[in-house]
Length: 363
Image (cartoon, rainbow, N blue to C red; front, top):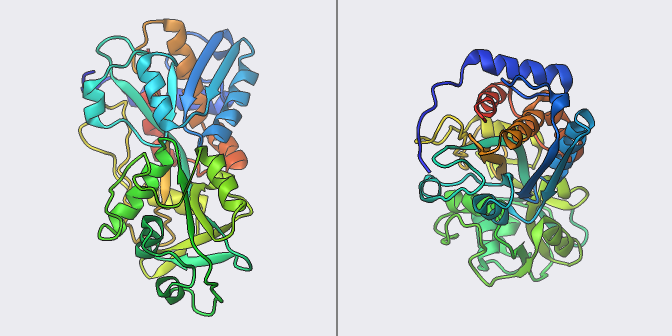
């Protein structure tokens, strides 16, 4: 798999893509002679559980506008999705992290034409909620060092002085803390541990990892597994995409001198304060999230989940389906549908422009 800069991503094509998306909701197939209504066939994807609700909304819109198209998405986790895409088992993947440049160079990418770039679109932006169940307590303020200690297993009781220090007036019980983590290879885990590693490296020494590195606490499969384990316990704490954390007690994290709760708005602020990664193709919009930002109201435990495809497919029909579906997802209508159904943060207009240019390059 080569890395090169693609010069053909022009502003005119971008405007055309956005116009199509705006005029027909998700009936957009940028820079192609086919109208969206001519699309037909089956598109298969796999990957992140975090995107599941959003992808359901995008699929409903896309299939409504293209009744001869079927979109299947198997939410088996980010790692499985990327592996399935690399093997050629699916035509696109959803992932809570982008491929690394080393992974791209090593390949292979069985879904793609030989030698082509991959397309990575930041289509889903969402906070990762730190959720807990503790009788009589609905919210807590915690700094990164304390969170790192809890998940590393060095803080084991809810009345620990480190927790009490940021929760004056809260009657903390001596209940044992049970941290809950993902048992599967997970982009949500990668984003959460990246936050811990960036802000408390002396406490969380395992780095940024997709597979939970310690035997501490309880393991659960998928986002829903973590949510159910936390809800079903007492003294439990875990991390989950906020779209599936409604109605559960949650943590506000320290950002600068303030404590900020998880919200779509806070996630969007954190993403807009973060740069793109360098050394990637123009179709590869990987973002380097600034976990240590002190921007006002930013919520840095955020995941950017990507739609991943090929810049070139061997089959033109597949390329048209992927282009149409990705265009639907990043359109203002698609982003609004995801926000309404999943509580995600709509991508900014600037990011949509760059994403539309990358989608336009699919052929």
